[in-house]
Length: 251
Image (cartoon, rainbow, N blue to C red; front, side, top):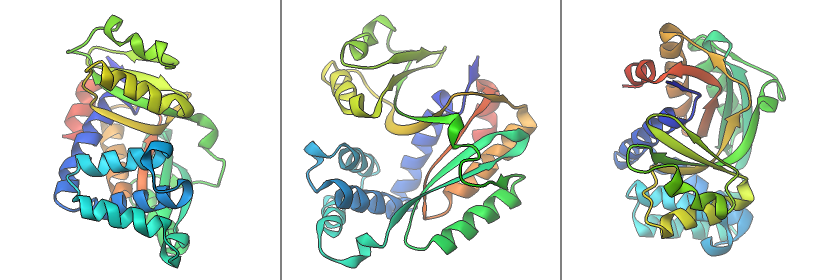
């Protein structure tokens, strides 16, 4: 079985992020995501899919309700702090020639750029120029579901709700949507009682690079180093690796 920087990896990293968040390591990232989403789309999650998703992630990480409400208020308020935060996309290559796309929310481009460049150079990668790898990814809604609990037929309701594809392997299903259809498809699955392991708007690779165990280990260290930055909100990569290898190097 092969995975492509999503699927099993998405599930592993999602669970790891929740554990880290409960230790407080990710609260600043979650707060920033809520604030920016509220600033850009308003404070009502019903009409703001990005805010709805950010709030869901915060709740999964057991962020207190007061913290969430303060983050929303900061985003919709008149203060300049939220206005100072901007979205930045960094592009580069990791071990084995794997394309790496880094999403960041920052109030200081110089600081964040230096952190990202250091992570790449320290872990066998290279930070590239804008446009160097972004064309290898498409922004999609990605909903990960345990393949051991459901059949593909049980998930076909997602297609009826607007999903464009269901990607399968032995362990997981990935329900893929256009960003505009993501909220409706997720709601249809939840209304049907389907338990979702993770759901996010993420960059999916259009081409894959096979990596061996040694390269996979180095790549995971690069990704972990990037994610350690408070400013980095998500990391995407187009690697293709066997699931058993991935389990070992991500463990």
